[in-house]
Image 1 (cartoon, rainbow, N blue to C red):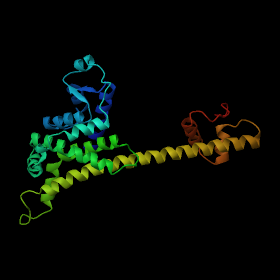
Image 2 (image 1 turned 30 degrees about the vertical axis):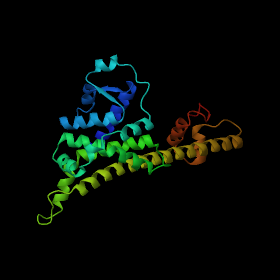
Image 3 (image 1 turned 60 degrees about the vertical axis):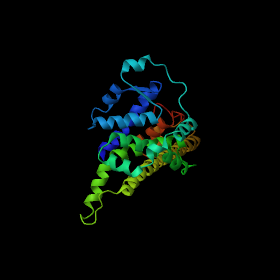
Length: 262
Protein backbone atom coordinates (compact mmCIF):
# COMPACT_ATOMS: atom_id res chain seq x y z
CA UNK A 1 0.00 0.00 0.00
CA UNK A 2 2.82 2.41 0.89
CA UNK A 3 4.54 1.71 -2.44
CA UNK A 4 1.32 2.51 -4.31
CA UNK A 5 0.96 5.86 -2.54
CA UNK A 6 4.56 6.71 -3.36
CA UNK A 7 3.99 5.58 -6.95
CA UNK A 8 1.00 7.94 -7.30
CA UNK A 9 3.07 10.81 -5.93
CA UNK A 10 5.91 10.00 -8.32
CA UNK A 11 3.54 9.94 -11.31
CA UNK A 12 2.28 13.37 -10.30
CA UNK A 13 5.87 14.59 -10.07
CA UNK A 14 6.58 13.14 -13.53
CA UNK A 15 3.55 14.93 -15.02
CA UNK A 16 4.60 18.19 -13.37
CA UNK A 17 8.11 17.87 -14.80
CA UNK A 18 6.66 17.17 -18.25
CA UNK A 19 4.32 20.17 -18.04
CA UNK A 20 7.25 22.41 -17.13
CA UNK A 21 9.12 21.09 -20.17
CA UNK A 22 6.25 21.89 -22.53
CA UNK A 23 4.65 18.46 -22.59
CA UNK A 24 7.78 16.32 -22.95
CA UNK A 25 9.81 14.09 -20.64
CA UNK A 26 12.70 11.70 -21.22
CA UNK A 27 12.84 8.03 -20.34
CA UNK A 28 16.00 8.75 -18.44
CA UNK A 29 14.21 11.38 -16.29
CA UNK A 30 11.33 8.98 -15.59
CA UNK A 31 13.74 6.26 -14.48
CA UNK A 32 15.58 8.76 -12.31
CA UNK A 33 12.38 9.85 -10.56
CA UNK A 34 11.26 6.25 -10.05
CA UNK A 35 14.68 4.89 -9.10
CA UNK A 36 13.49 3.97 -5.62
CA UNK A 37 10.51 1.91 -6.82
CA UNK A 38 10.71 -1.88 -7.44
CA UNK A 39 9.67 -1.67 -11.11
CA UNK A 40 10.25 -4.06 -14.00
CA UNK A 41 10.58 -3.08 -17.66
CA UNK A 42 6.92 -3.88 -18.31
CA UNK A 43 5.93 -1.41 -15.57
CA UNK A 44 7.85 1.36 -17.30
CA UNK A 45 6.06 0.56 -20.57
CA UNK A 46 2.72 0.95 -18.78
CA UNK A 47 3.90 4.29 -17.43
CA UNK A 48 4.89 5.44 -20.93
CA UNK A 49 1.43 4.41 -22.19
CA UNK A 50 -0.25 6.26 -19.34
CA UNK A 51 1.71 9.44 -20.05
CA UNK A 52 0.77 9.21 -23.72
CA UNK A 53 -2.87 9.15 -22.64
CA UNK A 54 -2.19 12.41 -20.78
CA UNK A 55 -0.83 13.95 -24.02
CA UNK A 56 2.74 13.80 -22.74
CA UNK A 57 5.45 12.77 -25.19
CA UNK A 58 8.15 10.46 -23.88
CA UNK A 59 11.51 10.89 -25.61
CA UNK A 60 14.82 9.10 -25.17
CA UNK A 61 17.09 11.67 -23.50
CA UNK A 62 17.16 14.98 -21.66
CA UNK A 63 19.09 16.49 -24.56
CA UNK A 64 16.18 15.72 -26.85
CA UNK A 65 13.76 17.39 -24.41
CA UNK A 66 15.86 20.56 -24.47
CA UNK A 67 15.82 20.64 -28.27
CA UNK A 68 12.04 20.23 -28.64
CA UNK A 69 9.81 23.32 -28.86
CA UNK A 70 7.11 23.83 -26.28
CA UNK A 71 3.85 22.27 -27.39
CA UNK A 72 1.46 25.22 -27.45
CA UNK A 73 -1.38 23.16 -28.86
CA UNK A 74 -1.84 20.64 -26.04
CA UNK A 75 -4.91 18.56 -26.80
CA UNK A 76 -8.20 19.69 -25.33
CA UNK A 77 -10.69 17.31 -23.75
CA UNK A 78 -12.87 17.37 -26.88
CA UNK A 79 -9.89 16.40 -29.06
CA UNK A 80 -9.01 13.65 -26.61
CA UNK A 81 -12.53 12.23 -26.79
CA UNK A 82 -12.51 12.41 -30.59
CA UNK A 83 -9.30 10.39 -30.65
CA UNK A 84 -10.82 7.77 -28.37
CA UNK A 85 -13.79 7.41 -30.68
CA UNK A 86 -11.43 6.66 -33.56
CA UNK A 87 -9.61 3.86 -31.72
CA UNK A 88 -9.75 0.41 -33.24
CA UNK A 89 -12.51 -1.22 -31.22
CA UNK A 90 -11.76 -4.60 -32.78
CA UNK A 91 -8.65 -4.80 -30.64
CA UNK A 92 -10.90 -4.87 -27.57
CA UNK A 93 -13.60 -7.24 -28.81
CA UNK A 94 -12.30 -10.30 -26.96
CA UNK A 95 -12.00 -8.64 -23.56
CA UNK A 96 -12.04 -11.92 -21.65
CA UNK A 97 -9.04 -13.27 -23.55
CA UNK A 98 -7.15 -10.03 -23.06
CA UNK A 99 -7.86 -10.12 -19.31
CA UNK A 100 -6.63 -13.69 -19.03
CA UNK A 101 -3.46 -12.85 -20.93
CA UNK A 102 -2.87 -9.67 -18.92
CA UNK A 103 -3.04 -11.60 -15.64
CA UNK A 104 -0.02 -13.67 -16.68
CA UNK A 105 1.89 -10.54 -17.71
CA UNK A 106 1.33 -10.28 -21.47
CA UNK A 107 2.39 -6.66 -22.21
CA UNK A 108 0.47 -6.47 -25.50
CA UNK A 109 -2.74 -7.56 -23.77
CA UNK A 110 -2.18 -4.98 -21.03
CA UNK A 111 -1.71 -2.20 -23.55
CA UNK A 112 -4.82 -3.21 -25.50
CA UNK A 113 -6.86 -3.34 -22.27
CA UNK A 114 -5.70 0.15 -21.32
CA UNK A 115 -6.71 1.44 -24.74
CA UNK A 116 -10.05 -0.36 -24.59
CA UNK A 117 -11.04 0.99 -21.18
CA UNK A 118 -10.28 4.65 -21.94
CA UNK A 119 -13.73 5.47 -23.41
CA UNK A 120 -15.40 3.89 -20.37
CA UNK A 121 -13.35 6.11 -18.07
CA UNK A 122 -14.72 9.16 -19.91
CA UNK A 123 -18.26 7.86 -19.44
CA UNK A 124 -17.64 7.29 -15.73
CA UNK A 125 -16.25 10.81 -15.37
CA UNK A 126 -19.44 12.24 -16.87
CA UNK A 127 -21.46 10.59 -14.09
CA UNK A 128 -19.72 12.91 -11.62
CA UNK A 129 -20.80 16.02 -13.53
CA UNK A 130 -21.13 18.94 -11.12
CA UNK A 131 -18.73 17.50 -8.56
CA UNK A 132 -15.64 19.24 -7.23
CA UNK A 133 -13.29 18.33 -10.09
CA UNK A 134 -13.55 19.07 -13.83
CA UNK A 135 -13.93 16.14 -16.21
CA UNK A 136 -10.33 16.44 -17.42
CA UNK A 137 -8.99 15.89 -13.89
CA UNK A 138 -11.39 13.02 -13.22
CA UNK A 139 -10.35 11.30 -16.44
CA UNK A 140 -6.72 11.69 -15.44
CA UNK A 141 -7.42 10.12 -12.04
CA UNK A 142 -9.42 7.35 -13.69
CA UNK A 143 -6.56 6.64 -16.08
CA UNK A 144 -4.22 6.31 -13.11
CA UNK A 145 -6.66 3.94 -11.41
CA UNK A 146 -6.77 1.89 -14.62
CA UNK A 147 -2.99 1.73 -14.82
CA UNK A 148 -2.70 0.52 -11.23
CA UNK A 149 -5.52 -2.01 -11.71
CA UNK A 150 -3.94 -3.55 -14.81
CA UNK A 151 -0.65 -3.80 -12.95
CA UNK A 152 -2.28 -5.59 -9.99
CA UNK A 153 -4.50 -8.07 -11.87
CA UNK A 154 -2.30 -10.98 -10.82
CA UNK A 155 -2.40 -9.82 -7.21
CA UNK A 156 -6.20 -9.63 -7.33
CA UNK A 157 -6.33 -13.11 -8.87
CA UNK A 158 -4.16 -14.45 -6.06
CA UNK A 159 -6.50 -13.03 -3.42
CA UNK A 160 -9.51 -14.52 -5.22
CA UNK A 161 -7.95 -17.97 -5.44
CA UNK A 162 -6.92 -17.98 -1.80
CA UNK A 163 -10.54 -17.33 -0.79
CA UNK A 164 -11.92 -20.26 -2.83
CA UNK A 165 -11.54 -24.00 -2.48
CA UNK A 166 -9.95 -26.05 -5.24
CA UNK A 167 -13.25 -27.81 -5.86
CA UNK A 168 -15.21 -24.62 -6.49
CA UNK A 169 -12.51 -22.44 -8.05
CA UNK A 170 -12.87 -21.87 -11.81
CA UNK A 171 -9.77 -21.80 -13.98
CA UNK A 172 -10.31 -18.08 -14.63
CA UNK A 173 -12.83 -15.40 -13.79
CA UNK A 174 -12.86 -12.52 -16.31
CA UNK A 175 -15.86 -10.95 -14.53
CA UNK A 176 -13.78 -10.65 -11.34
CA UNK A 177 -10.90 -9.11 -13.31
CA UNK A 178 -13.24 -6.55 -14.86
CA UNK A 179 -14.73 -5.74 -11.45
CA UNK A 180 -11.22 -5.22 -10.08
CA UNK A 181 -10.45 -2.74 -12.87
CA UNK A 182 -13.74 -0.85 -12.60
CA UNK A 183 -13.45 -0.62 -8.81
CA UNK A 184 -9.93 0.75 -9.10
CA UNK A 185 -11.03 3.39 -11.63
CA UNK A 186 -14.06 4.38 -9.55
CA UNK A 187 -12.08 4.46 -6.29
CA UNK A 188 -9.41 6.69 -7.86
CA UNK A 189 -12.04 9.19 -9.03
CA UNK A 190 -13.88 9.23 -5.70
CA UNK A 191 -10.63 9.58 -3.75
CA UNK A 192 -9.71 12.61 -5.86
CA UNK A 193 -13.13 14.17 -5.25
CA UNK A 194 -12.91 13.54 -1.49
CA UNK A 195 -9.43 15.03 -1.41
CA UNK A 196 -10.64 18.18 -3.16
CA UNK A 197 -13.64 18.46 -0.85
CA UNK A 198 -11.41 18.11 2.21
CA UNK A 199 -9.06 20.80 0.92
CA UNK A 200 -12.02 23.11 0.30
CA UNK A 201 -13.35 22.50 3.82
CA UNK A 202 -9.90 23.14 5.24
CA UNK A 203 -9.57 26.38 3.27
CA UNK A 204 -13.05 27.50 4.31
CA UNK A 205 -12.19 26.75 7.93
CA UNK A 206 -9.06 28.90 7.72
CA UNK A 207 -11.00 31.78 6.13
CA UNK A 208 -13.59 31.56 8.90
CA UNK A 209 -10.92 31.62 11.62
CA UNK A 210 -9.07 34.52 9.99
CA UNK A 211 -12.33 36.48 9.73
CA UNK A 212 -13.03 35.73 13.39
CA UNK A 213 -9.57 37.00 14.33
CA UNK A 214 -10.01 40.14 12.23
CA UNK A 215 -13.33 40.91 13.90
CA UNK A 216 -11.82 40.35 17.35
CA UNK A 217 -8.95 42.73 16.55
CA UNK A 218 -11.37 45.48 15.48
CA UNK A 219 -13.52 45.00 18.57
CA UNK A 220 -10.52 45.02 20.90
CA UNK A 221 -9.01 48.12 19.31
CA UNK A 222 -12.35 49.89 19.62
CA UNK A 223 -12.55 49.04 23.33
CA UNK A 224 -8.91 49.79 24.16
CA UNK A 225 -8.60 52.72 21.74
CA UNK A 226 -5.13 51.71 20.51
CA UNK A 227 -3.54 49.31 18.08
CA UNK A 228 -3.37 45.96 19.82
CA UNK A 229 -0.63 43.33 19.91
CA UNK A 230 -0.79 39.64 19.22
CA UNK A 231 -0.40 39.02 22.95
CA UNK A 232 -3.43 41.16 23.72
CA UNK A 233 -5.53 39.42 21.10
CA UNK A 234 -4.37 36.04 22.44
CA UNK A 235 -5.53 36.96 25.93
CA UNK A 236 -8.80 38.44 24.62
CA UNK A 237 -9.70 35.31 22.60
CA UNK A 238 -8.11 32.89 25.08
CA UNK A 239 -6.24 31.47 22.12
CA UNK A 240 -2.56 30.34 22.15
CA UNK A 241 -0.19 33.00 20.90
CA UNK A 242 1.36 30.65 18.34
CA UNK A 243 -2.08 29.99 16.87
CA UNK A 244 -2.67 33.74 16.59
CA UNK A 245 0.63 34.10 14.75
CA UNK A 246 -0.23 31.21 12.43
CA UNK A 247 -3.52 32.88 11.51
CA UNK A 248 -1.74 36.17 10.92
CA UNK A 249 0.62 34.46 8.49
CA UNK A 250 -2.32 32.80 6.73
CA UNK A 251 -4.03 36.16 6.38
CA UNK A 252 -1.08 37.47 4.41
CA UNK A 253 -0.53 40.28 6.91
CA UNK A 254 -3.91 41.80 6.07
CA UNK A 255 -4.54 42.11 9.80
CA UNK A 256 -2.45 44.96 11.16
CA UNK A 257 -1.29 44.55 14.75
CA UNK A 258 1.18 46.37 16.96
CA UNK A 259 4.54 44.98 15.83
CA UNK A 260 6.19 45.92 19.06
CA UNK A 261 4.01 43.47 20.98
CA UNK A 262 4.62 40.69 18.50
